[in-house]
Image (cartoon, rainbow, N blue to C red; front, top):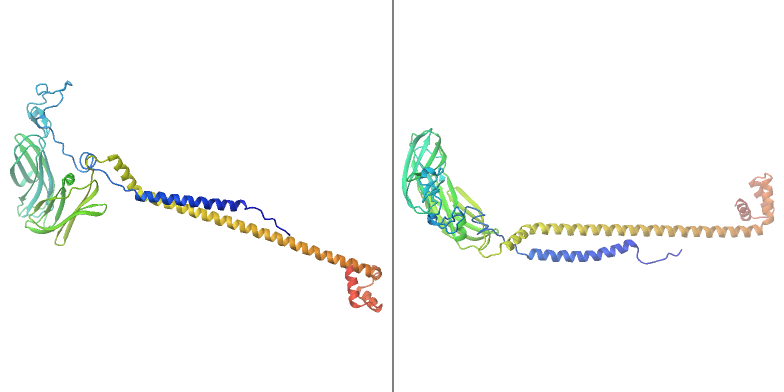
Length: 436
């Protein structure tokens, strides 16, 4: 049987087209990944939008001295002092923590306790550090009072007088001696600043108990000033004696150190450490300060960002977004590419198997037709042989048929045919023709 061979079937055409498309898609994905990896992402976030107004820490807003130059309440332009509205004449006309200065209610000072010992043992010194900051253009001596109190009873106290000029900030460390017979319990540490009739106060809870273990603390000060090349920190211990502390300062960008310094320092209760650091370029940074005293180690970690004036904030924002999502995009495209390759592979395997099944089925059909042709040929040959035999032995065949019709057995027919001169082979052939 002859099988006609034509052009490729539909599954074969699909496989060819898919393979061609897969090559183009693979090349495009490689090009895109190359462009994505080569894009450099730069962070943003300092200056106006980082350290300062919108970033980490607080921006210092410096009022203009004397309060002049503002617009008048009526909407006039120049704003002479005679046209300015008088807000107050005495401090009692202002709100809490405010003072009447040049007929304007202002907050003169900020006061905050930065660090203090807690817990602390009776008979030891309670060390603490506070910040006092002038918020107006006013200079003079201020009185600082500090005391430890329990149930509205002072158990120890002290005071200092310091000079603060307009808009100046001061960080001061001092201590209060605790009586040796002081009972254990919870107390309150108060710090009060007084300037003429102006007062502002800050307080913290302190625990007094025995058998206090040595402690070490690190506090980062003025984080925004790092952009200007200054690094400040406060390192404190609860020991009343001087101790040796190993201090390590490190600034890193993208997990790579850009500045580092380590040194051993003698600390007597509290040390304000100020260090000049190189001016940093725009980017995101991590500052870490680690202090070690014997077997005791403590550290502080802060994150900040810087953008220098004149840099393209919008472009940096785009680059930061691309940088942060770069890994996710690479993973996504690799995943899609893998899914595409696996899908095409499965499709190719399916079509190949389908083609193999079709070929096997076709081969089986061809074999069946060939067997049928062979069978027909054999039957034809047998028929022709039968016809020729019937013509040669027509007379004996008729005799045998009559004998069988008359009820003569087959064995008796064979015996009489052999007695009549027919051979055994001829007898068998005649009987076989009659049976067919």
